[in-house]
Image (cartoon, rainbow, N blue to C red; front, side):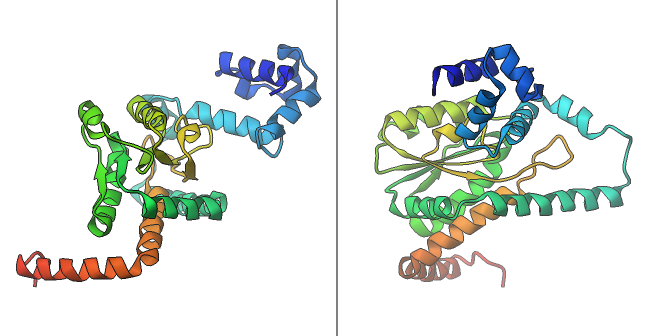
Length: 269
């Protein structure tokens, strides 16, 4: 960054609750630079322009709301009947999937698939509500690859990652509000040379800069909870792409598992 760009960046960092709502001219005035410099700063960061940058700042601020604040914001205007609620939520989920499809980069997805295939060991870091989809990913990857582990106990993470190295992959999943432990683990494994794949909801997520590969999925619905419809769909796509790329290995593994399942009568006849 240039000296002027660093001044803008420092102002935004120091005023996170105010900066997202300033016009380009007002931000320029407060920082002491020209309005054109502010606009170029937004483009320099990869945004289409200042309005796009401002929108992302505002969205990032929303992700700091407490659960109580989110509940209050999403219930303003009175109660809805159950029939209206299910239509509203399903419509939001449809939009989340569409938004995710529009924002996923083909090359990023291919890199994610290749990283999973090439990894010696795969560790999944997903806490609180995100643990539900982390467990789903662990089940199917370990079923066919036999090298995947979801780190369930936050207090025991140091023992799990004791021998992690550059041949391993860590998949970090986190959505607002992001857990500090997920961020801390991703920071640590990067110091050990491990590759990181991040599945998160926003370019300004604290997980985003910690991912060698980043996949962004929309989770917004008009509720205090996050919707995991789009992240789960992305996980379905990853599992399917990995298994199709390793057809011979997966086919043999599934045939062996079928014999085992029959022997122990796992499934209802």
